[in-house]
Length: 146
Image (cartoon, rainbow, N blue to C red; front, side, top):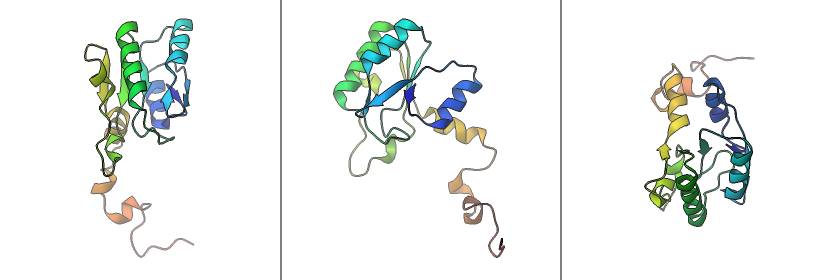
């Protein structure tokens, strides 16, 4: 898992009983060499990444790094969970293709995984479907708290 990362991802993996190993985000991309070194020291079942509009950093992984990660996944056999929850934030351009586009035979899954899962676990309707007063803190108009 990248460090820093979306807190909801940490919660989701810990709730599922996962042991989390981290790799720092460097210059808008995960360091494939560091990933390989981490995996060689402690086998993992999957790699979770947010390469498009990373949360909280906001970076977009460049194409060469995407190709290298896809190749790494194909060669190592370690699955990558690509969280594309924020990929549609691109304004005026298309978001980059998912990692799996660079290695169709690699064990890569593209998901709007954790954002979507977090929304499904929240019993309230999505913010866009709530009345404005609920989305803005839960107080009905006219109520004043001093």
